[in-house]
Image (cartoon, rainbow, N blue to C red; front, side, top):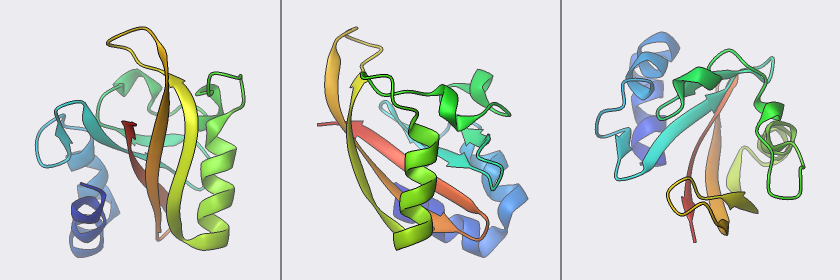
Length: 118
């Protein structure tokens, strides 16, 4: 899903891509997977599942230990350009803390990601 999101962003531009990522429709939202993007000010500019977070600091989203995730995603993307981050997160369907992995890529000024429970 992330590869499709990156290709769409590069082909269609930022505005069209962010709009598509926020629509909650395939291919950018499916079976609990969705694209989210952090802008250069570390605010969420796209979130295919939790629209209420758009415009808010990505650091409001924290792992199970309370560590803000926005800064971690941003720093890793600036250093590597792409990769994966493993962390513990509350699964909203089971209400249990589970291992999660998010794959991310820096695209222009944004960092976009798709995460899944391991």
